[in-house]
Structure formats: C-alpha cells, structure tokens
Length: 436
Image 1 (tube, one colour):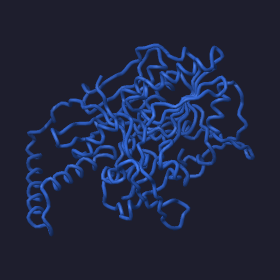
Image 2 (cartoon, helix red, strand yellow; image 1 turned 60 degrees about the vertical axis):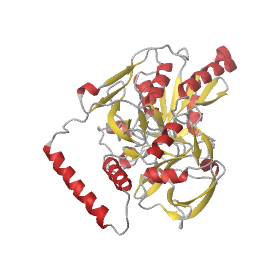
Image 3 (spheres, rainbow, N blue to C red; image 1 turned 45 degrees about the vertical axis):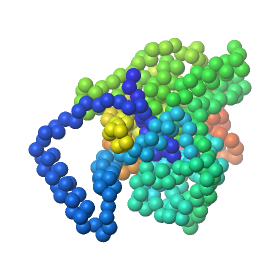
Image 4 (cartoon, rainbow, N blue to C red; image 1 turned 90 degrees about the vertical axis):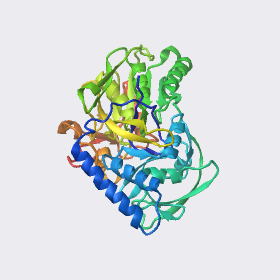
C-alpha cells in the first residue's frame, strides 16, 4: 500500500510519508504554460541582475517554488534538501525540538497544541498562543517550514520564544531547553475495569503501540474488562497507513476510508481485513478541536460503522491528503495536496470536522469564542468543504454542572458512559454562529 502523509498542522519535527510515484504532469505542452514560463524567466533574470545584493540562483529558485506551492493551500509546501532530510528522520517518531504543533496565521506561528510531556508542555505554552519571535528575532516574513527549522536544534540547547497570548497586554518571552521529543505510539492505563489508551500522533510505531496496549490491558484487567476509551484529543495526525491499521484493529470488515484525487482513476479505497483485537468490547473515542487528519479518519471510520461512540467537541476538519514527491537527489521534495479523504459513509470532513455523537465540553470553551480552537476553516486558502446539517452543528453541548470539579470532565463522561451511568452535568445550546 502506498504511504501518504496527512498533515493537519506543521510539527516541530512532524510526520512524514514514504515516497510515492505520481503520474506525469498533464498538459505540459500547453502553449500558455510556456508563455507564463517566459514571464518567470524574464523576472528571474531581472532580479538576478539588478537586486541590491548578489543573490544565489538556488535561493531564487527555492523561494519561487515555495511561493508557488504554499499559495495553493495551507498544507502544500516545498522542502529543500535539509528540510526533506529532517522530515524523513521524524517519521521514526523522534525529533529534536520543543514539542509543539503549529500552523501559520497572519504572519505569525500559532500554537495548535503542545505535545504531551515535552519542553513546551512543561513550560506552559498554550493552545492559541502566537509565536512572534525566536531568540529575539522577529519571524515576520518567514515561511512556516523556516520558522520550524529555527525552533529545532540539539537536545540541551536553549531557545527563547516571544509569545503573544490573548488576555496578556504585552508579549513575553519563554526560554526552553530543547530535548529529544519522542512522539510515543500510545500510552495507556487501567481506569478500574476500563482500558484507557492515549494516542498523541500517528507515526510508524502507532498501530503496534495500540496492539501492545490492548494486550497489556486485557492482562491487567482480566475478564471483567468493560470497554476502552481511545483518546485522540489534540492528535494532529500523521501517516495514512497507520490510521488505516488502527481503524482495522477495531473493525472486522467494511470500508475504512477512501481518497479521491483530481482524476477518477486516482480514487483509492481501503477496507478492514483483520479481526477486532478488542473482541467487540464497547469503545468511546474522545476528540476535540485539536483532533486532525489521520485521527479524524479513525474517528470517522469507527463512528460510521457504529463501532464506537464519539464524545467531545468537533474536530479540526483537515480532510486532505499530502503526498511527498522527491525532486531528485539533493533537490528536496514537494509536500503536495493530491486528494481528499472520505469516511465510509462518503462524508468529507474537510473544513467541517467530525461531529461527535455526544458533544461534551471540558469547561466553557464550547460557548466562549475566544477560547475556541482554530479549525481548518480558519486557515487562509483552505479547500472548501461540504455543508453540515445545522441540527448536528447546533446540538446541545454537555459541560460540567456548576460547582462540580473534574480533572478531566470529558474522560469522566466517557467512563460513566461505558458504565451506563449518567454524569452530573449541564447542557447548553450554542448559537448557530459559534464555533465548536
């Protein structure tokens, strides 16, 4: 099976895909294309000859390719040879950096989520923070990949990020010590008679980690095991083949996902082939606004097959597939959007997200716009999506009852659901124009 990368956001070390072959470009002999290339050649020569300082040809070409590709959509980009090499390393699940998932917005880097157990998480970097500077230098004008490259570095080295945070009157600096960030395949623990499995991303280790978690939890809990909670909150995605394998681990048969490209012959369908490793035990999947891409494939597949109850808040809505296209030895690669993906029911979540079966907020974030997470629909140049029925978007959102304190209300709700209990909670109906 071909491997594709599903990148919902930029990662400090991110996830990569294996190389895939694509058809030759169509329409290459179009006369109008040659005319446009003449225009580019003329501009190239004038900049080369007249710019205030000498500019390397490679610098101009790299910038031109980056501009061409990055203007297509938020997830397509050009990686030079160094960036491409870094990406190939990070697909193994480890990288050097501070550990945050980011996107670019209005010239600044916006934090989607800190990765569990990383320097950024420990330092209190928050979702929604904007990074305006790195080591005292403004990042204005930098491409996302360039900013990410500056934040990477050797373990033990220091980096200072200038943060803009809503509610704070002035920017402030946070100094971090870079570390080897391990994007664990899965972490897990028993919650009484329920198995809890947390997946922070989808790299080459993810499906194996899930299978180990299920084996160990079966041994720990024994025959009284009532079910599983699969926590995909703040999971930004990763490798398509891992999302398929994880879904397959819960499904005995049926379509998991389909990808549809520009041409009918590009359509690919992926079906479940193995048995259910959980032996049919009930499953609750937790999602939120940081659940993106590959994690949305898993959520959508289990939801459509009614294999799991999806609980939480509407996911990020990143429903496109990026293919890594090498450009030759030492010439980098393109990360190019080549397809959209569809859940088994034929639903595209692009710019809409997976809507939970039961909408449950952690606190007040569902009804307070300033605390709402960014979504695919917020990204400039995003691919358009299909409409979602208003009755689903505007369903009541369950949140903690006044005076009730929870360490993790969404998880508590999921555990009660598997036990057949009613969580003490309150419900609010959000206005139609408020984001989930």
